[in-house]
Image 1 (cartoon, rainbow, N blue to C red):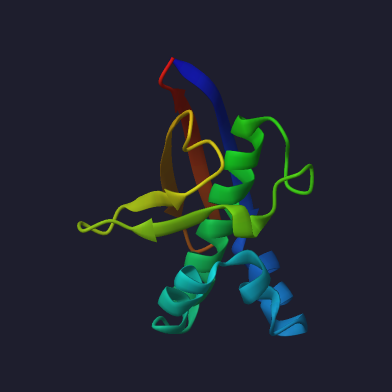
Image 2: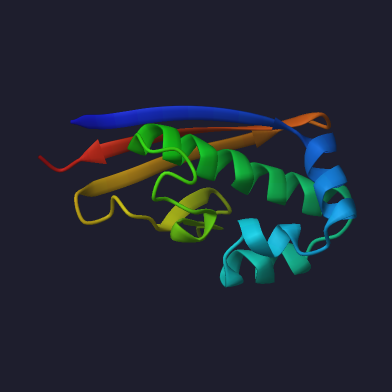
Length: 121
């Protein structure tokens, strides 16, 4: 049964500006494993990756019903590529009750993510 769904989009120029203003911005949004993946990328691909994770975590927070800062932080969720490269929630607060499904897409202007939380009950 669907527990919740959420969608978020972010302009990649906002992500790029945040990284330029604060070099620690990426490490605040990304977990250690996500950050390790981020550092293997370069240029616009880094910004797309970071923007996609930002959008995925914001969408998750909406599906979860709390929002970021409402008892949920960016560090509570981890999204890494599966064996085929598709994004997958590796760690998230809903895992004891069900599954989290995520889709991330981006253009040269923005990143968008859609999350569905599926309850086992």
